[in-house]
Length: 177
Image (cartoon, rainbow, N blue to C red):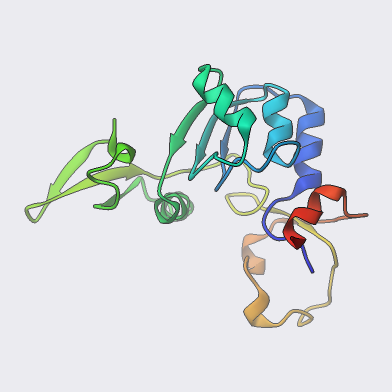
């Protein structure tokens, strides 16, 4: 079974490089001692834009102690904000989350008499999965046509570099549970 989504080896390398003040856009905060948690442990993350952090006690503690700024988004809205940034848009308009805590501090607009939130687009300097520059961590490099179209999650034109992964670390076992 292939690992899905989290490039653990590249995150470890980023942690090793010890850059500080990072803003991370990620669906979740991973679990303790996995993925993003290595960057949190090193005090490298200033802001996390995410859907949830509930599986990572370190992220929760850092947020509660004001050592980590966390911006929560509904999952579909997070994806749309990233997509909008990649498409060159400045923002999206949505009614999702309008009457929830997710709306706190966000601009409200009225379109055709309907209230909505203005969600700013998200852009990244680089992405380990998908953004202006995509670096894909792969277990196997195949020849053109070696992957069934239904198994392609990030089309080739969006990938700038491919990094072959050596041995799988124990962190990859989480995707096999």
